[in-house]
Length: 392
Image (cartoon, rainbow, N blue to C red; front, side, top):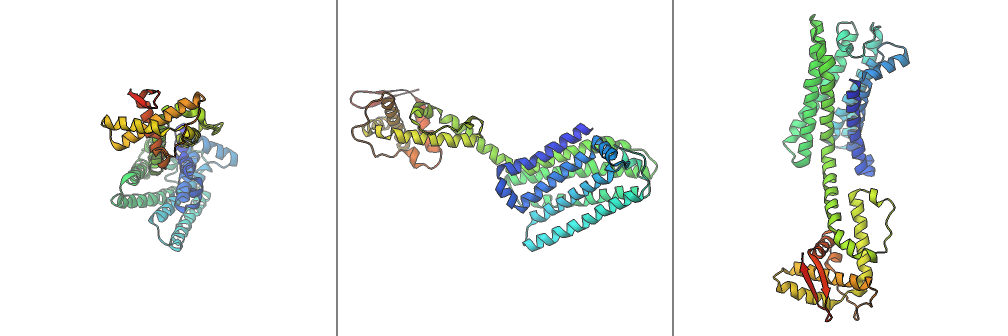
């Protein structure tokens, strides 16, 4: 069971890395992001503390049987408090109101943690229990109250989370709605799969019955599943747009391949040593810079006669004005690249024409130019300076 719990903690905690990796500086300055990450870290720490291996290590280290129990319950209570503070930031309002409500939540749950520790000190719990402490001590004075307190505190936080998510799901759309639905699903899994089973197992002990398997076998994996669902809900609105952007960057990077292979010899932009290990968007930005640098180097070889005659040919073939322009520019760039690579003289009259790809501030212009080059498998320059493009 420890492996499953540790895996849940690792997955839950990795969400923080995703959130901070996307915009580290903005994340530190955003109270909502900080409170989100604080809740995730405390949730991960709860799983780590609850693992039987961790409990045994803590008990051995302190020399106090079951010392890991108030530690785990205290961290879980802090996690519950962090969820309420996260909801307070979600709801928004004036900074003073947010601070006041957050301090109230911290005071209430801080007192709850003190009560948990006090009850443990007062209780008689000398028999170490690593996986079934809740049911084993369910009828023991003070331990009984401690177990009930931590469960009630967690139930209050998760209940508030469910209520807020249900309300906001009706008001938002898109990725935020999907994220809230996953958070709600995680909260319901926690309430039904973890808390309800714990309450049932403990109540069964109170009535003289044995349903310990609910607490020891059902609750832990359900809590792990709830944490995984929670993680997806927190990270989806932040991660999916970045994944889509990197996917578009990969497509654009590959589309620029024909243009880059044709003119890369003319680029003087130094390639970063780690460009192959960079994210797709970073690699795309470097390729754009390198292509623009190569086009600037080839500018003295641009021949307007080549472009104009290629434009006339494209228009006669029935192409639209914009497509014909890009096709003609591709012919001019290909002609300039051929003459530059053959070390011929630049055009007699340097062109002052500006490519559409250099007018477009984004990547689309370069992609259109690259695709126009890719559509032509052969570009032949005839003596009169005309260009004939053979479609592929």
